[in-house]
Image 1 (cartoon, rainbow, N blue to C red):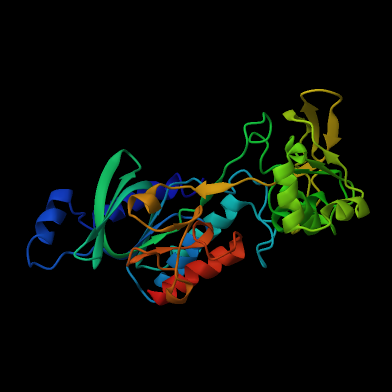
Image 2: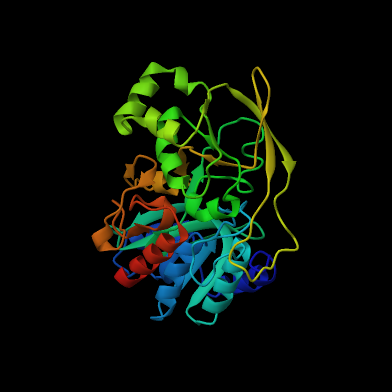
Length: 360
């Protein structure tokens, strides 16, 4: 990948010009009245769409910014990204490459691969020391006035063999992101029975041949009561849509066909992906499906929010949207999927990154 190879070698020497502080230097300056040396106006942790949007916004007003990218992305497995006007159907890696190449034309920004391991507030959060491990095994500490977390979330996919291995390629959680490519195909909804009615409503204009795989939860009265409370008359709704509930426990999902089409026109925003899977159970005959939409919990992809004491709202970082998505830690902001502003898609990630950049 462009960012992982050619530019990494170029980025690290640029970082060395910032004369990073050591932890001893940082602590000694904090205990004196001498003004601290600040390396960057902001350090952005994460190089997905939200981090790149924040970097672009800050670059446009000549802020001195470092972006550190771990190279780990929630959508890394997906074939194409969608619902991004002007970039619909692009591969995620290509999208990031184009964005980095464009933003790299601004002289006040630096991008590099690495993993941030510690963020330490200094002098009542007037600046931060940020330590990371960079390509080549270098541990370096920089100072910044602000820190932006674009660290994302991770999907907690169940251990059923075949689910995680095929996630992003015929198995997805977002109908707006991946559903159109599997329209008019045999679809499976995988998740607790309480999630089935709402998910069915989301895909009702895309798929009519739908089976709900509820993994034994439809026999749980507490779960059934919760489903009725959240979606009254849900049984009638499923019946009207001709959606059966398959409550046997899934033991394995076997891929029979890869739906990627190497001959498809890459300039098109969308084209069908004809995957095929066989679902195995703890008893009885298997079932064939072309695709699955799954309902799984999420968690923070990074331990940094917890380590700096940022308040969480469930699995998301609590932020103040009226103040640029600042967290409970003054001077630290959270953007994209990681925050609790209510959306997990690329357009929101771009918006949130730009909003934080403007507030800084």
